[in-house]
Image (cartoon, rainbow, N blue to C red; front, side, top):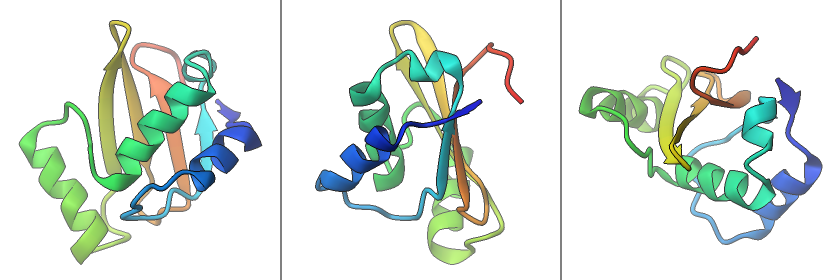
Length: 108
């Protein structure tokens, strides 16, 4: 996993995105970075605003609990399909770190 370029975070900061929680430090796998800055920003904006993509209802409920009722107990998970690949975004329970990776790729 590599740290996401400052350009991605600054672009996201410059957009009018309703943030429901902190992302913390952003790191992305090489395959996720290959999606490009604009696509990563789009997916991160969806994640942080509460559009969690194609997750199951129980995961969505867990996300809502983590954000509103019990921050620090559960991670926030989103999955999106991009060009036939599943992209996963996970924000740690303490919201200090968000990881972005493509399913099936080896991650650390």
